[in-house]
Amino acid sequence: MEREEFVFQQAMDFTGGEKRPKMAICYDFDRTLSPDDMQTFTLIPSFGVDKGEFWHESDMLAVDNLMDNNLAWMYELIKYSKFKGKSLRREYFKEIGADVQLYRGVLSWFENVNAYAAERGIDVEHYIISSGLKEIIEGSKIAPYITRVYASSYLYSADGIAEWPAQVVNYTTKTQFIFRIAKGYLEEYDGRVNDSMPHSERNVDYENIVYIGDSATDIPCMTLVKQKGGYSIGVYDPVTNNKKKVYQLFADGRLNFYAPADYSEDSAIFAYMKNVIDEVAAKEKQKSEQKVLSEHAERYKKRTTLEKLLNSSSDSLSDEEREVIKSIIANMK
Image (tube, rainbow, N blue to C red; front, side, top):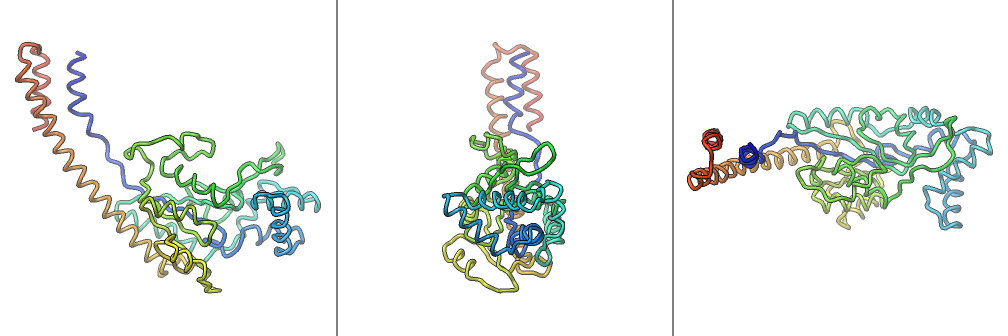
């Protein structure tokens, strides 16, 4: 029976279950979905420190010690918590997250995008890739809509108190998460993200990835996504209307589009996202059509191969094997 199984497998292994097309939209958080750094709304003021003073001290600490800026502010938070006698607990960060301000339309954005995409046969996953604190984002109002949050985080003691940075995300390390999302190796410790992966096995095609950010710290991700055929979007504060950063990013070829950070249903960015979804849906339809055409051509090729096998191996095939091959040929026809 081994020969029968081999012949049958060769004839049928090119078929497979259809996967629904998928998009991934990746967001920076501070000044992209929220108008300020998430720490400035409640966390820093709770120490009785002016936010400008805090960030100045943090920046000087980084400069004086040749230190990563994100490690510097994470250290400063622990220092102030000890000085003020306030424990930095995981639960406290999540409580703070509920008070983080969001730009207009953010809360309805995810459902609006998902609904529009679903009408066009596309599933959408949403990811945050931020240098801010993971626990604060997980406590925010948008957390239920997010597939995964990639952000800086602390190592906590058995009592749940922040002791040491467990994950630091800066502008260069952000890019690894684009690869993780594309390949589906979502855990931060999963080294398989560096492995080669066939196109057909990816979690989401690179050309179906959108990255939304606001500044130079997003350049590596913007560049990577755009070079891979995806879509890079820059946003600016609609109150200050300062477009300097997005002008520069667009002029340097980092962006496909820029707009105010207004995510409401009548906004420019939502109109553009609908265009992106339409384009992805059209490309996915073409891929499906090509797959069908290829499948028919492959069936014909395999059928003729089996017919030649049947005609040229009349003496070496048993009657049972001949019947199996005839049955497969009949099904292909």
